[in-house]
Length: 301
Image 1 (tube, rainbow, N blue to C red):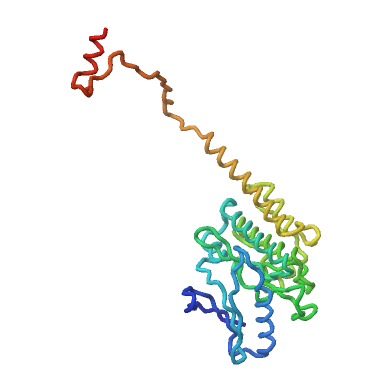
Image 2 (image 1 turned 90 degrees about the vertical axis):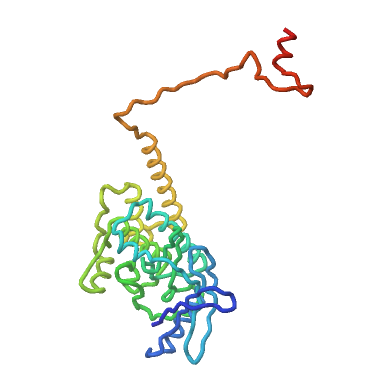
């Protein structure tokens, strides 16, 4: 329903992203309400892992969101380039995303469209969650109709696919799909149409993750993908902390492996130790009166 432009803030001298409603939309008033809701839901979400909203205004019936410009690739771009990722490369992205989601959930905001295209990853590894365009807030007027399905079919939670109200556990499920895709190189469910894919999220068991993935990581991602929201992790903070513990353990294992690696076929160097040598006769130098210190020492002997 919108177009996103790169702009320039003349007063502050910085690039910004400008999201504006398309002028050719039908039912423009309803779309404007949606954009206002996005602005409302994003306004108080100040966190390093959430793209910041700077300003919102309307002109001639068109709404404009002025947002932080994130000059980064999306996780979708990274998946397209790399396919399956090394867990130690993927985990920091998932951990930061979970932290950002926890802050949103703490403010009563459910993203409802967590997917790789909405997760931006900078070259330095910093993650930004973007696009709260279909988000839901517990303290706002309901915009979507009861039974209306909101989200992207490939990453939608079972309860959202059935038209039920999304909860923080719905975002956790979607992040679980992102984690599954990052580890496997493909999503857990496919289908000929979005309806088929959404139905698979509701009815079909999640295919197991590859056996060569760390068992604790496999089990935790599968818990995020539980059909029943009550069987998923308690909140996104639990997700970030659990994944961080797994990351630390995998890093420790990698460090131990590197330290224990021995280069074979070469003779190990001998360890040599020695004590400092103290000369009996000092090196000659001149005293203030012009005589040699060494000669003076011999005369005393």
